[in-house]
Image 1 (cartoon, rainbow, N blue to C red):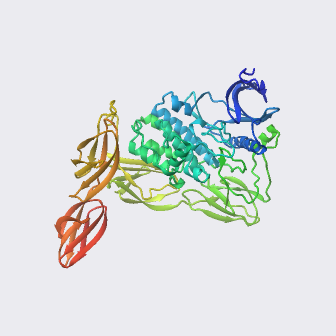
Image 2 (cartoon, one colour):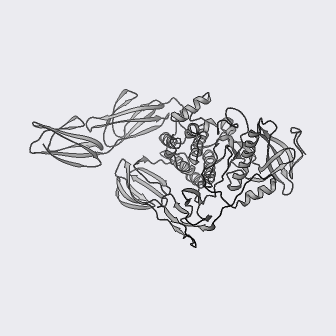
Length: 633
């Protein structure tokens, strides 16, 4: 029986028995109903067309509704709300019957609770990351990723929803002809050009996780203009006090990457971002970490064909510009056409011989006549003269031209093999690649197969670094910072008093003079500590004896100790001929003559100058170890 709160709705929508109203907005309503055949609860979304001003707007709203049905037919993931049925109720318009998720919206949980533990937050973020990567693997961009489009079930598992319909006409949601997406979660390119791809979703997901973990927005503001300006021009705000259980430096590094202004500077996938995030988490047990990691699949499945549509909505398929009309056998979509009876979905044919395209490994992207048409394995119509290009991340691309009577071969893709420099700070770390110990220490050149994932581990004494690399990912020019491992015995607990001082401790082989925010704090010896008030500080470190200068930003947590690492020392021997002179390092008197004498200098870039009676001679060095210098003077 229909709920009295919704007197304008029928008792039955299609075969579903209406029970009560779940919510309503400018474009429609959602009601709870039951499928009498299998006694399953469903949420039914109905369009509201009577308030639409123009025929054009009505058409666009219908296209958005159509898009949600199209897209959901391609997605099959436990973290995405499933669409069960589509139809049209006479006198009320089109409807979608979808999975009913008893639970709470994520935005409500973030604002007013219940309070979530670190593990619960990571489980939610991990489940959403895998769901988004699944959609991206199908060529689908959500374009409105935000906590309001996530339901958290009673079992704590998240469900991503709303692939297509804006529900309210206010400053935070879209309306026909206005901003596409939600301003607080939009990417810089979405704001500037209105263009998006999967990397835009990754940015929005980064904003969502930032807010989920900290309870704060990375780009706060009291007006839409302020928020948009900060997204496009400013870095994410610093969280004070830092999020419990996550290294402040790791937090900053991870979110500076996922929220990078340039799409190409972000993590390649949502799961790659979450793996990076987990590397910064210290307050998580081994079993809990394994459980969260288990949510992050590699998503190696082949994407489904992309949808071509003229609608503009919160859900967007990665655009291509096909020169010919495609003939993909959208069986699921055809079933929807039969159910609706309105002819929403348009199909067309293409002349040519339909042939199977396969590659090893699978999942390679196929370009036909320079246009993306799908991923292997796939069935594709080919005409004589069609040119194919097969590309897969981490592998060499292949080209092929189709000739009459031929059957395309199974394309065997060769991995890209490169020589990569693995470096660390401090240097001299042992290198383990894919569980195999390599000869030598950092900096070390290694042979890198980009066609497969890798696990890299660096260790030196009690310090270490570990990271996973996906296909096509390389160390590049990164210098990996080694950190001291934490255990339940050594892990620091923050003070209950948020104003209690913290401290910095020096790790390295020589003393430095420290200035904090311009104030001279004196000499700091290796292993010694200096007290500092909680908050972010700009430190200047210097050693005139070893020709070292550096500046570091540190975040101090009440009652905890941050570690400052200085580089190792190298012995530099300077000799000139036929005469000798005074040796200067970086313009500073080294106190020795160029007669074969030696001095210890901090690793890094330095300029060595020798001044003699008849002139001077200089040379700039990038010191990575001991160095002998012999110069004519």
